[in-house]
Image (cartoon, rainbow, N blue to C red):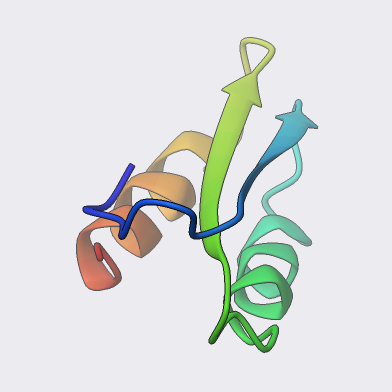
Length: 67
């Protein structure tokens, strides 16, 4: 998680995926686009052994937006 001020609300969003290359980028973008000005959000992606490009898409997205 990111550094947070004591008392700042936080949530964890768990995204279970398997072979979601067609949808995972837009799903993650929608989560990142939420108004999070008053809350710390942790996004956890749990991959169930995808055989398509899902893991690479998630890895690429991770490197573009770390708080």
